[in-house]
Image 1 (cartoon, one colour):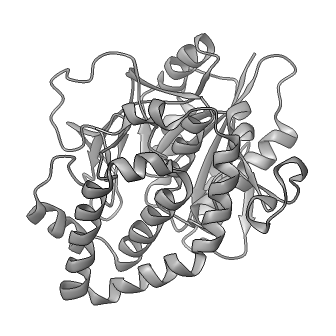
Image 2 (cartoon, helix red, strand yellow):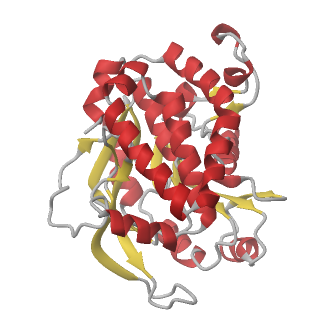
Length: 360
C-alpha cells in the first residue's frame, strides 16, 4: 500500500500545532508517517510534539534553515526510511497553519493513484480565522477561498486561483492546474526525484555527470515561491498537477490576498506583510523567470512582463526604497540561476508552445 509522509516545517509554530496535528491524527488514510522538521524553535513546539505525538519523527536544526531546505531534509529522510514494500511513497508538504478535513489525504490519494502521470495534487483550501487571537483556538471556518491551485498571467504575475472569492461552486470539478500551493501539497516522490536539482546543476557539471547534494525544493529561495518553482519544473518535465475540490482544508494564511485585488488592495496587502516576506517574494519571483521560462514565451509576452515589472520597480523606488535590495540580491545570484536554467531546459520534455496554455 502506498505510504504518505507528512512533512511539517516548524519555526516557533506552537500556536498552530494543536489544530494541525489534531486534524492529521483524525485522517482516514492510516498508512502515514508524521515528520516534524524544526528550524530551531524556542516556543515549546518540539516539547509539545514529543509529549502528545510520540510517534512523530522529529528532525531538529540548530538554526532556521528556511522552508525549502527543511522540507528537503524531510524528503531525504522519507526516501531513506519510509519506502513501502509495495506501492509508492508520497510527500504531503504542509504548513503548520493548516487544518484538514478527516478525509483530505484519502480523497487526494484516490485521485493520485488513478493518475500515474500526476506529480502533485491538492484540494480546495478555505480561509481560516482565529477565534482566539492569542491562542488560535476555536478557529472560525469560512466559505472564502484561499486557493484552488496556482494561476500564471501573461505578465507572469502568479496568484492563488480564486483567492478571496466566496465559494459559489465556481471551482467544483477535478481539473489540471499549473501547480499547487506549498501550503498543502501532495507530491509523488518519483516526480520530485525527476525534477530534483543537484549541486552540479549550478556548478557547471555536464548533465550526464550530475553529482552532489540533491535539492527538491530550490534552497536558494529559502522561503516563498519555492512551490511555484517546483510546479514550473514539474510542468517542464511533463508531470501534471491536479486540483481535487472534494478534498477540503482550511488555512490561516498570514500573507493573504485576493486574486482580483485592485492596486490599492495590493499596496495595503504589502504593508500588512513583513519586510522579510516582501523581500523574498520579490527576489524569488525574479528567480522563477530566470530559471524556468522559455525564451520564446518571455519574448512573446515581453510587453506585459515589462509593464508589470516596471510598475513594481517604480513603486519600490518611490515608496519602498528598502526593497531595492531584492534586485541586488537577485543579480548577485543570477549567474547561478542561469546555470540552473540551462540544466532545466536541457531536460525539459515540454516545449514553449505547450507551456503557453498556462499563461492567461
